[in-house]
Amino acid sequence: MKPGGLFNSMIAPLIPCTIRGVIWYQGERNAAGPFTTLYGTQMRTLIADWRTRWNDDFHFAYVQLPAVKGVSNILHQQKRKLQRKLTRTFVKKARFFPLMKRLYLILLLIIALPALGDTPTRKPDVLIILTDQWSPRYLSWENPQVRTPHLDRLAAEGMIFDRCYTTSPICMPARVSLLTGLYPHNGGHGIWGNALNYHVPPAEATMFQFIKAAGYTTAQIGKTHWTSGASLRQAFPKIEDYHHALGLEYVFDVSGPPDSPTDRSPYGAYLSKLGLLDQVAEDMHERYVKWEFQPKASLVPPEHYHDVFVSREAADFVGKQPQDQPLCVVMSLHSPHPPLDAPGNYATMYEAEKLTLPPNVPDTFRREMRTIGHPEAREILANYLGKISLADDCIGRVVEAFQKRGTWDRTLVCFTADHGEMMGAQGQLTKGRFYEESVRVPLVIRWPGQVNTGHTKTPVQMFDVYPTVVEAIGGTLSPRRQAVSLLPVATGKATIVRKTAISEIGSQSPLNMMATDGRWKWWADDKGEFLFDLDSDPYEMTNLAADPAHLATLSQMRESTLLHLRSSQTNLSEGYKSKVKRLREAEEKGAGKNKKSPTDKLP
Image (cartoon, rainbow, N blue to C red; front, top):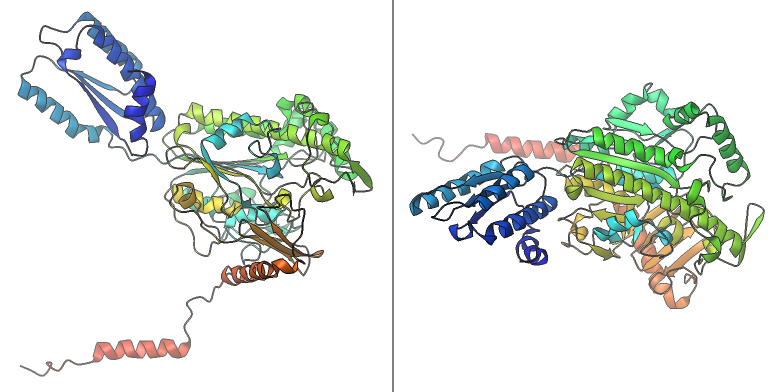
């Protein structure tokens, strides 16, 4: 039988099942001659496939009944090879038992096999890859110009959510939403933009706490951006105490490239040892002050770039963890966030003149006293894509670490971004807008044997990653969370988990809000009201808000947004009973206890 036949007939039908072990029984007719070599080869193939698809502790019992005339030297040699090559494999050779004794041996093995696999089912490792400012327009499955082979492999093994939206198209509120499972408008969150003096309260930032409670080692490696100003130090003089309160056992915070020679982050210390900190800080400061979208290669080579530094730390951390302890790692990369400083060969990887711009990038537009035409826009895009390809290589590095750990085939992976990047669309750069380039984000969920592959356009949100992970590992979701698990969609048990995806941003009242049901998209901001049909107008070129033909749709989207707001508020008075009602219930309860039965006076 060819390997393809083995897979299709014997392995594929078992993939959806929870398999603890297998007994392979060969009769005495297969004990000698060419069959011995043939079956020995097939067994190795099957065991390798089974262990790949389930886990490394997959148990295998082999019973070979020899021919009556004896066991050939070939069989003996094959058995010795199996003993050497198949770790933790039980190989048993039966001697010359009568028929009933042979059957009795097989029965004993069948009874004993559950004991061989009597260890608890291993929980999956969890890898959350959080990137910064990655526009969904520049995913390889939406744009073939993009080169991300590592991400492509992840996506091919998982579910791609084509309509995933951030709760806020700017860093800090989006990241706080992921930690809390709350919208900016909810109590316990409360920031609609980046803040100068804020820390997310541990009582609300429950994601890592509940992952840890499920028995996991928890780690955040890379950019955090949950805090700012003196607020944190006032509440937690020691940063380690804050991280422990969040449920994190290991934090390696690298916010990005340093812009000050006094930077004391792990990456700043690393550059200082290399003698590069002053130069990098001066370069970054100049970029931020003058023009962060100037496409110019980093002063450091790729091996010393900040995201490469973060991915190495993540890979090293994974490699040091005990295999019998489930692991949840968030690797948070700064790329492809500006400044546009792709290092080394990544800065020249994409030829600007060969890049195609989306149709919603105007011929020219103004940005910070600059006129940008298509040639300049392509130069900007080329460097941005270089940073995307670098981030992809960082993803490949941490994936390899999980492969070496031996848990990759059962590792749950969630890849996403805090928000997108306009990249010239609608004549805009950076984030903070409700256009698709800025508010929609990538989301891939990969979990072999558990999650379906393919695409879905059901509306979901980035912070839904939190309950998805908690449900997958058998944890408990804290009450009042607005995020919902995506496992029902990812596993094919449901086609929708929320009717509307919401995003919010603003620095002053009136605050700005967006809603989409996956097809229709509505928002209101200081420039007016907008309505787009994403199915027929994916680049949002025609605003339908003022079109009388779409008045009913406009009203419907307004009403669904209002209903969502009314339904997603934090209500700490839920379940309250008035004093009168409580007293009456107590009276009725007491009266019931003291009420005498008609038979009480009977002898």
